[in-house]
Image 1 (tube, rainbow, N blue to C red):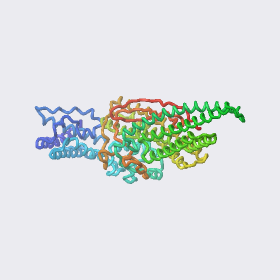
Image 2 (cartoon, helix red, strand yellow):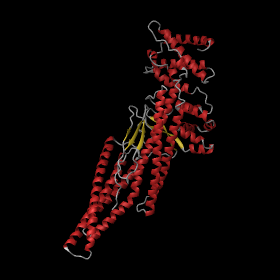
Image 3 (cartoon, one colour):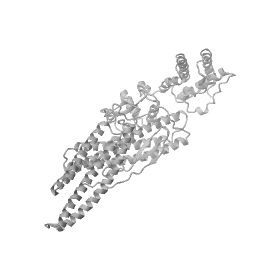
Length: 577
């Protein structure tokens, strides 16, 4: 297996370990059941060629322990030598295993549960920084999860420029670079050094709580349920008002047509027609106001149940909608009290004025709901890419080939990056539209807002298509992993320096500030088995509210991953009075 001279050296080392085993009895019985700790963390690429270790038996337990240590040394030595990770691989392995034995003994003495498992975690860092990465500060290498470093190693092989680029970065910015998705790393490397560093300087790492699972705020389940129920009621009320509006408008127009023959005529029939036309006009105006009110309520209740919209923005939208609904309710009262043609006409003008003042805004609010949903999908997808990187790193350690999988993960990352780019462009358009909102907008301002919203929605549709393509690629990746004998296991994310148990790092803009909840964050603690593709019927309303029929949501649920699709129904477009 390894040269004869090396065998003699190893056997000398084994004698030392045997003595330690006899004297301290520090290797727990669970040692025989657990995978080798160092081997688990730094598995040899050819580990499958290593003979199975002997079972610990009552007849000769010490021999079994000796064999175990020998196998651990062989695996460690083979791995370090093959990958040129140490100039003195045997000495390095000896130190690692000796330290772990002392570690287990120390923790056992202190009464710590699962000492072997905890020592594995301690010495994972030792194995992690053995590899010589001269372009990467040791403080960076020791602070970042090993799968991120392996991803960087692959990047170095395909992009030689990355060595000088990372080498010259401040430590904090190097960590930011290591936390970026693959496609974003490559995009930076495609820039000249000045522009790449300038772009990277806009970002920082932020600790976020895992409990905030792709959310910008937390809404209690009872409030979400109430908002969803009220949305359904508003939807039914809107349909009812829409139907009544059309009926009353038809009657109004019919009687109005008959009234043309009564011009200058003062008969009982003509006077009856004049009264009827007023009543029908009042009825259809009231139903027009009800349509607008219920339409706005649908947006309001969707915002109330959306955890993808921060508290400040949600309050702003809801306040604006409530104020408009209050105005419409006041005008309804005026319509009901109107006796003359002039009073009815005045009320009709008021309804039109209120609707014109809000119509461009409600389209913006509805589009923001789509925008927020796309944000959620992108964050889930980026998290999923990260989980794939961790899974592939684990497969490599087990000696499983990932040559056919790597290009697909790169493609998956590119699709997500394209969607994110469109999302950011849409975000800028929404900002421009927000700047045009005024209390009494001109016709030009309303038109500009509608044009910006239309353009933003097209960008979001393009982002949505890219996310659907990413999902298709993801399914191929999962099939390939299974075909190679790999496995996507539910497991905790690799630990990183400076994080609490319930925290992860997120790349955010330097100007990023928490909005709304103090717990505002983007990333959660979902684990990866497979994935689901959820086409959410996130509106089910008329065209004015949203014409985005499907939202593709990629989720990596830790228990069950299902694929479901719901079609959203298209209602008839609003008619204004």
